Image (cartoon, rainbow, N blue to C red; front, side, top):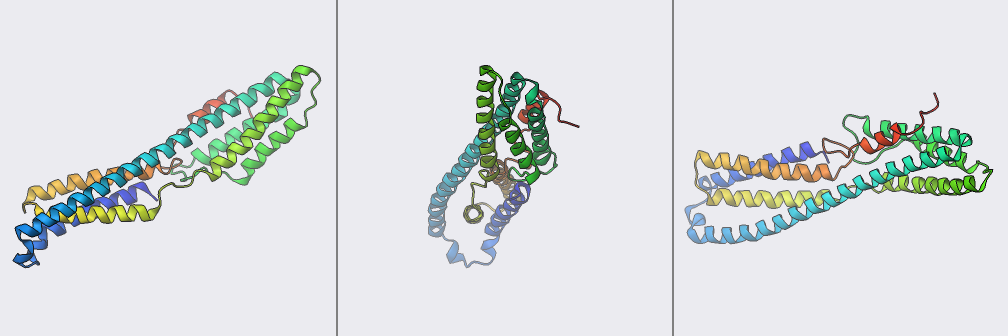
Length: 256
């Protein structure tokens, strides 16, 4: 779900709902706009407003938690890539081919996920990137240690490589959207009803139109933030690529 599109749609829907409420007096009989009717509308609107506030707060909290978890996973992934390169460096020259493959994978990861201007809602890698990481694991597996120190380093490198393969699958498959479209649709319906009631109970002058514009922009911007946090690898709030760039800067250059 595109944050700009949905946020703009929410602004338009809520503002239009308020305008509809302001103009209902033209089509409704006078007895339908009595004081008793206004009191019931206010009570119902208060209940609906509480529900909408709770759902809106829950959506923001859920999206922020998911975003922070994914961001932490990317930083941990970059740290593991850096540590793996350092362990292979300590192993010696025999590990240079594996180091170059780890570096090539980091460069491909950066290109696949962060080069695209608009990005993707999920961490999208092509199969070639996975093959590079798997090739690095096989290159590590083929190393033959000549001392106890190299044997310990090889065991550590193998454990890190297996962990990276697992983390990669979790990042690729585990960054699905946490907010279902039906929840957004129901919330927007509630907000539309609330704004209609605001229009019915509000005074009918130009200031109200300005108030509705401000309120609609506020609600739309909140929806924009929710949807952007829910799509961590795309849009203006996408997760930073700096951890991967920093890891790549500390690695041996990929083989030309």
